[in-house]
Amino acid sequence: MSERHDDYWFPAKTFGYGWGLPRRWQGWVVLAVYLGALAVSAWRLPPSAHPTAFGICVLVATALLIAVCALKGEPPRWGSTR
Image 1 (spheres, rainbow, N blue to C red):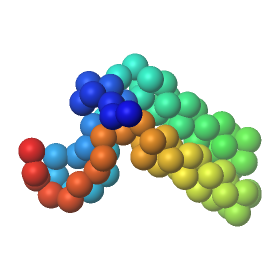
Image 2 (cartoon, rainbow, N blue to C red):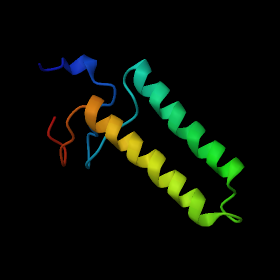
Image 3 (cartoon, helix red, strand yellow):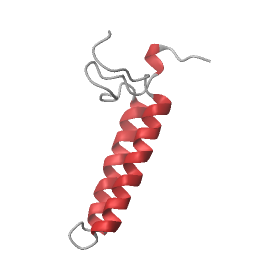
Image 4 (cartoon, helix red, strand yellow):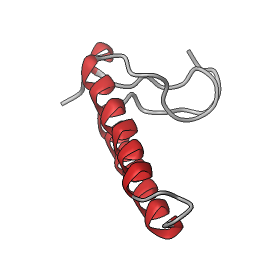
């Protein structure tokens, strides 16, 4: 089952590889949750006091964001091919 172009939560970047800012409200919710997770991690595990724990939280949150972008975003491509 293929998705329509408008159904992607994250558009492919025009230049480079990856995704741009969210196109749909669901993408904005995912981005807000990601930023909230980073803020809570910085508050509960200050990088100066717990650098390893903070780094692990950032890595896990970023991996989850990339996974959601890969699942719900437009297929990324390299360069300007629009």
